[in-house]
Every structure is written in C-alpha cells, then in structure tokens.
Amino acid sequence: MSDKKASSGKPQKSESKYPVNLLDTPFPMRGDLPKCEPQWVKEWEEQGIYKKIRAASKGRKKFILHDGPPYANGDIHLGHAVNKILKDMIVKARNLAGFDAVYVPGWDCHGMPIEIQIEKQFGKSLPAQEVMKKAREYAAGQIET
Image (cartoon, rainbow, N blue to C red):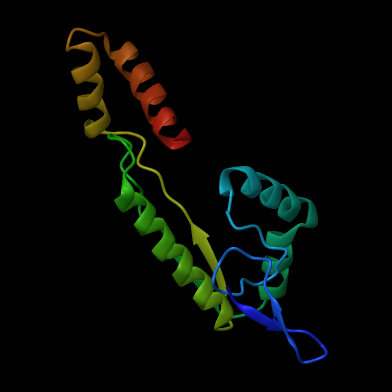
C-alpha cells in the first residue's frame, strides 16, 4: 500500500487498493468516443467554431489542400483513414502557421470502376439507364459510409 502524508506530516494509509497514487481527475477513465463525440460536434456547430476559425483566417495568405478523390468502387479501409488524418494535420498545421488554410474534398463518383462493380453485382445484361441508376446509388452509398 502507498502512504500519503497528511497536513500534519504523518503518513496516512491510502484507501486505494492500487500500490500507486492515482490522480484525482474529472476526466473519465474511458474515452467513450461513440457516445461523447456526437455531443461535442453538436456543441461546436451551435457555437459556430468552424465559422469563427474561418473568420479569424480572413486576409491571410491562402493555403488550399485539394484532396484527390477516394475511389467509390470498393470498401473503405484503414488507408483511407490514414490519408484523411494526415491531410487534416497538414491543414491544421498550416492554419497554426498563419495561413488561411482550407480543405477541399473531392469525390470519384463516376466512371469505369463503378460500372465494373455494377456488372459484378448485377451482370452485363442491364440496360444502360439501369446501369447509370445503379452506379449512382452505389457511389452515393460509398460516400455515406
């Protein structure tokens, strides 16, 4: 057991079952991000945090990161997360360095890769209008995830 010194200078027995003195903190021991993050985002939107950041950056030298599109022809994977996190860090670092830094995302929601996915799912006998409809739905589904 760990000993604490009282204000009198005499050691007191710790009430903790742990052999170390843990910090007394209002922070929870678990992050619980799935529960906490939606509330944070709501508060940030209500407070207009992003608008305030954008307003404070007005007139500074511009830095614009045009993000190339993620491909909407396959499932999202860890590489997509790493890509977005690194780009977010770059934009924030440029903002802290005194730039008017903005992030402009792109999407790849058309073209042959998606049509190939539709062929794999539904075969090659669909009429052109149906292929376009299915491709649009497929791309929208990839954006939502």
